[in-house]
Image (spheres, rainbow, N blue to C red):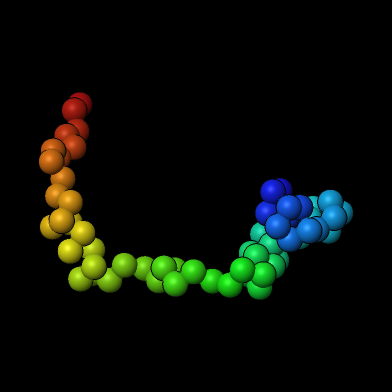
Length: 62
């Protein structure tokens, strides 16, 4: 609601009639898209895993 009313300046009737896809398009149209939207590549994920390894593995107790 803060985005719709405050940042986009929508009136309540317009805000509540939007679908999520329409609200998303309005926000993207107003503010653009973030460059981080692409998924991680395997290479990037592997680099993160090496930089921040799990210190303990989860266990399943039954």
